[in-house]
Image (cartoon, rainbow, N blue to C red; front, side):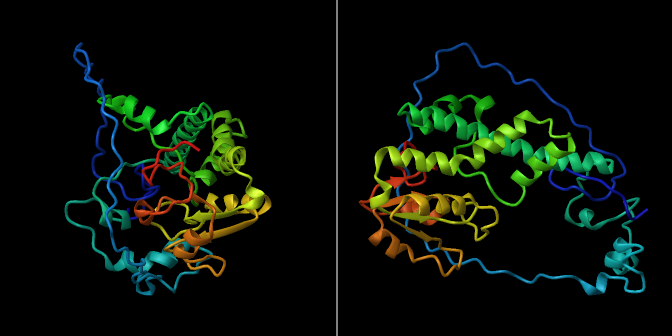
Amino acid sequence: MKNLFAATLLIACGSKQPAPTTMTSSTPTPPAATAPAEPPIPAPEPAVAQNHPKPEYGMWGFDREGMNATTSPGNNFYEYANGGWLKNTPIPADKSNYGMFSVLSDKIVPLEPEEAELAKLYTNTWRYIKFATANQFWMMANDFGLDFERIRHAIRYEYPRAADIPGPGFAAGPCLLKDTMQLAAFNNNNFVLGHTAMLINEGLPLYLVSRLEHVYDLSKLTVGVLGMAFKGGSDDPRESLAYKLRKILLLKAANVMCTDPYIADPRFSPLDDVLDRADLLVIAAPHPQYRDLVTDKPVADMWGIAGRGMRI
């Protein structure tokens, strides 16, 4: 059959291979019982001037030649959308079947449809929970006046088990929160861990503003928000928590200015204008341009991208 459901951790559907790959696990070898060297504290990376061209979209759209317009989409949408491609694409001699994801990779892990959907939901929810853990750790350290990045460096130093601890920051985008909510709904809202992760991550903009209010009288300040995309180096604003941060600051600050090198929005200002007019700067998306940030204004940078630490 040409049409089989399958999945990898990154792909929720695809084609079946003749023989699935066997997955194995191993227990890490404990380190030798020797006194570890004192871990050095990394110095901030030197600023390197870079030119970052605006991203451009390539060719995209729907392949009409791959369709089968003789089939009613209401009866068989897959055949309607892909029938032409299925008919005109031969199955390679070394494969029992062939599908679109086989073109992308030969490493396909066959799963049942429900297993494939849960694999996708588990993957994004796991990432979301890890980000929530890092954000909670950062808030705890920050409340006690400690720099979380120094602590994170110490616990990751020559310790592979802690190597995947992420840094703090806005956990957003079109998939992570949505899939965590979908997994909770699937389990009849019996998902305390997922709900807690949502409270932590979605509450981060409010926490950030509350910390700033402890130090500054925002009602007298112009606050500049640097970066409005949901992640660094991207022009995608979907579900970006930078917009939630902006809404809160509009209620608290005398004025709010926003800028982003990749997103065109009439409400935004050029970076130079924001740096000139703002009294306080908040990095909301870790765009690479902000590594070169030169300013004498105070900068709230939970990402640590500006090399000034993460304390706020």
